[in-house]
Amino acid sequence: MALDCNNSQLLRQAERSSMLDVRRNLLSGQIAELLLTRVRAGEWALGQKLPGETVLAAQLGVGRSTVREAIRELAGKGVLQPRQGAGVFVTALDVQEDWDSVVRRAAITSVIEARVAIESEAAALAAARRTPADLRAARRALRARAERYHDVEELVDADMAFHRRIVLASHNEILLELFDGFVPRLRPAMIEMLRIRPVRSPEDDHTAHLAVVEAVAARDPAAASRHSRTHLESMKTILS
Image 1 (cartoon, rainbow, N blue to C red):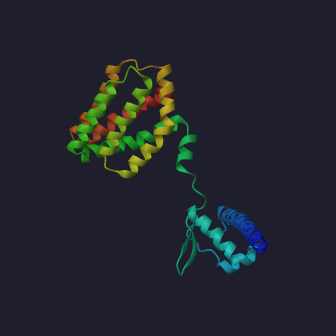
Image 2 (cartoon, helix red, strand yellow):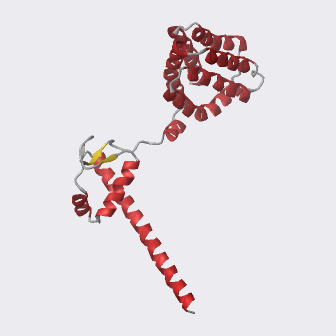
Image 3 (tube, one colour):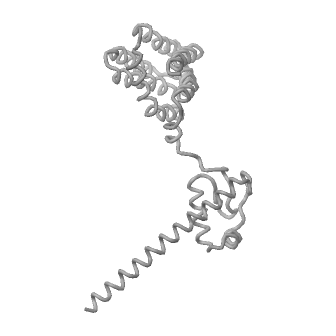
């Protein structure tokens, strides 16, 4: 009987502790939103130091621990940055939206425009930095692409794999990450487009891609960039 009583007390304590944690998290979230609103309103400029925890706690009518949790939340979102012994500083004027969400919402033409900027630069860098292995991989990807005109989905996947090979040859991790971010957004649109408007001339299409590879092989950054840009801008025209 005593054991049952102890267990009941422990359960009630755990429930109270859990409810306190929930309330604390909700409150710190609300305080984080209030601080973010003040940052957005320009109360603190970029790079400016916030008042101390004690001052903020008094202003907001909460405890210092709640302010501390709110600051930690905004620091995780890149808005604030606590600096040991110096205080808390504004590092962004708003929460940066998740990159994948931005790409998913963007119009296809906007995605293509960004690809033009990224891939034309990647092609130029590839021409300057490519290794023999990079060139062999790009040629293999191009051959694989040439064999996929019979199936729309396979062609789109082979096309993406080819373009990714060129970006890989640039040896720039940021450009590669940006390219990879576009693929999920672009793939369905490309499949839909090619089902409505199939490739008119596989030979011309292949030649346009071959021109990029040959410029990379010749270590001609200007030509590689030009051929990449021309191809992608023609695709943008079709999708517009």
